[in-house]
Image 1: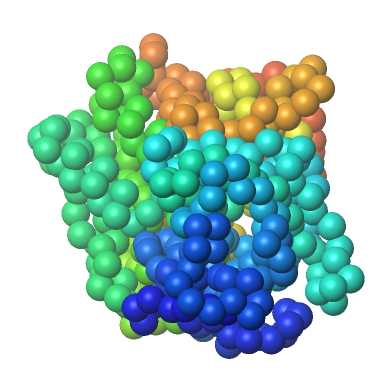
Image 2 (image 1 turned 180 degrees about the vertical axis):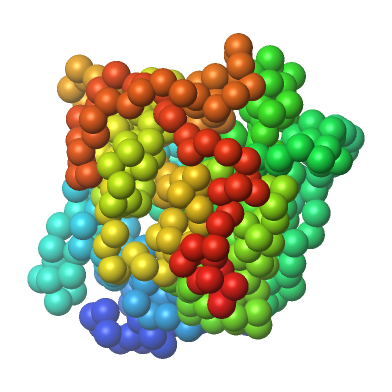
Length: 493
């Protein structure tokens, strides 16, 4: 392989097989890949690969033939275990040049690529992302790569002057979020407040949105809070689209949104891992930490964004004026379809049944949400997650969930084939999540908590059944914050 490099952002390592992932610490930068033995200026059709941009990821390219290339995902910074997200550009193509790209070093064996998932692509003349046809994508064990799973996809470059970009899923960068929040600032909405909750290790913003009617922030009445977070795992880009859909709906002039703002305070941290997002990691932060395993004792210097969010939650938990009623952490799932939730297990049957109500109601509102895929557990592997830790810390009147949405598709009832998600479909799902709070609190006719009974729910995966409105623990926030074991745990953290 003959290569020529531009600038100093990235490089490639030589070698065959997949044993050198830890050595790939940089993205390729304007890497020109020429046939074996070729010398001189690159010709049209000698592909130029680049991932040296925000959220880019491509660590190495091996030339196999004029029609085939092996591509290596750069591992997460400081953590070679995770290799899933990819995002790179290709240019200097020849018109109607046909190629096969093999992504050869995935760290996961199970993947939605087995079920029809395909990468997304756009080009300079067609800037809207679209999925490649599933028939052009193959996922298989490859004997040439230690029987590792390989995802191969065929592509035809049809325009010579275009720069083509390929990604694992629709990218949603830190810069995109900042532009979105700046545009929201320009609207000067009195019911939206943006504040800087902290800075990441690389000094990127940890933004916090507070969405509520202004009177709720100065009233002496109980403050009922819904806390939402997203992008703790940077490669799970669908979570950002879902989160934006929630925000878009809550700040809109829709009557439901106004009613929600009148009765609730929404706190939203839309990007918990801005460094990992910027760097193009899949799961980890700049320092190689899976932040969603460090909720129990986050470090102010190693996990500053997590530390900032946890301190705010503890402050609200210890406030006699605040009732933190929901915590929802938004993720994307690489092996399952639809949207679904993970919840916690309560020993008291009544508490457990009440926790199942919000997912049931969401199943009514969102056709792509699956209650049958929703499950409640106390898996020890998840002890350090936001859902598990906060579920054990907060009062029984607080419900903590992980909200998952598929990287690929959803199935509608009675449908025989999956429907691939689009950016708009993810945001629509977010809008439906926001609407579900209206059903939960029955705000269309009452400002009191729901009081109807609850049908029986299994503690494992269970089929959807007619939703019932929940019966919340009575009393004020102050009366519910008693001297319990949870309270002692809170003071010790």
